[in-house]
Image (tube, rainbow, N blue to C red; front, side, top):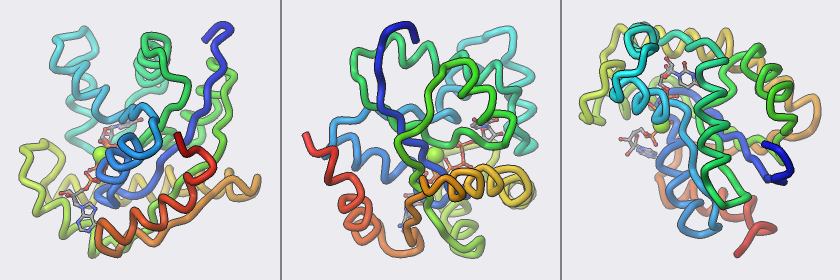
Length: 190
Ligand code: UP5
Ligand code: MG
């Protein structure tokens, strides 16, 4: 990112744990810019990019898109935006994502916000979402859960060992979850 100094918070948690919902609240109250890796990938595939078919197939299967593609999108979004505070939602999803992002951007997160929620609750939310996402069907949801446990939880463990994880009980109602989020972001008040 050249000389630009930025604060990055990684927002992690299983599919349907409420990452996007709470990021919208954090943006409004604390002036961060929200970058959802999933949203950036969905926009990239809609734009008819050469990677479009590959991205679509990965999302339909709940698999993790190669890190070069995702990191390029995140980097471009951070360079284009004048803000210096970013929420990176849904990334890094595996150890390779994490190591590549640090290597390419030289950024390490201020902390990791981890939304902890049961699969039963997340499944109920995803099946009720009705936004036409190609991955919100029971077959893909099960695959997403498996990838989260096998590949993404180790990333959270990595940051836990560095004492960087702030874990939130995300099974509570949206407003109650945000109360806990607010306490964590208080030092970043506008
Ligand atoms: N809801 C939210 N909070 C609630 C609460 N407290 N109580 C009751 N309901 C609540 O919420 C989901 C639904 O639950 C909504 O209807 C909401 O109103 C309700 P949301 O805030 O959307 O949850 P979120 O955690 O953002 O769920 P999402 O489905 O977006 O998570 P995923 O991590 O599965 O999706 P993402 O978009 O990040 O990734 C999709 C795919 O893209 C991946 O599977 C992968 O194939 C690919 N991808 C990569 O390959 N690499 C990346 O780096 C990122 C994505
Ligand atoms: Mg989301």
